[in-house]
Length: 283
Image 1 (tube, rainbow, N blue to C red):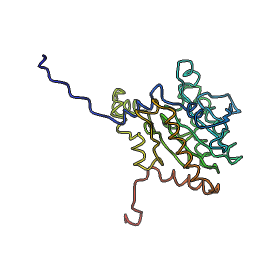
Image 2: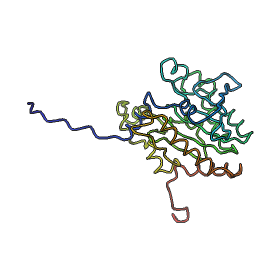
Image 3: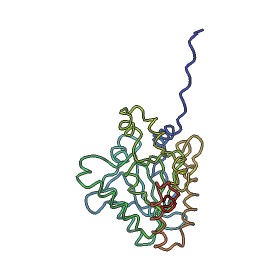
Image 4: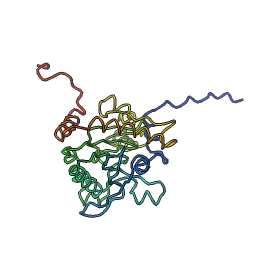
């Protein structure tokens, strides 16, 4: 027998474990949820300016016998799909397509459901030349003005402005093992620690898990996942999401366009504010 001591187990890092689960290759993507939750889904294409972006899947469908507009960021499974979907990283035309269809939904008084799953907006030169930052900024402003219910669900990765470009909603939910952050753990580690290998440390510091963000009042709720994660039971994960969508739509039903817009505006104005005392109390 060896006299060498047994190595101590590595310390648990729930934040990094959530990142790995959010990126699991078998995790349900937007089309998986669309297939299970919506009927008569008809995908619509193109931004009417440049082209169609396959990283964003959007169209009309029915949820519980009511018409809705669905916008989802779509990753691929195999290499061919990943190339087609650009690894789930939308270009400007993707955000413009999403906004075109959300404006159509508002015109016909249809609720909007967005499914967020992207490592971030595509940072390529061609995307920058076509106005990547402007397209995302335009969506942030225009989504804030939509007079219909907007329900956002982070189903996997919610990466930076690439996620936020379709995530200005009245209700924001996260799947239990999803993540939502201003930057990826690898990029954060490269900046803060000068070592991308310390991504796990960065993940813990970023407070990017659903549990962290619920405590910080950045989201409205966490959607439970079955077993060891949504990838082990996509049907069960979809049913959990179905119940949350039903509840959110019921809560938002009957609100006027002005009430929905004001609620959304106030929601995002409160984000990131952790001060309870007012100006007079500090004097």
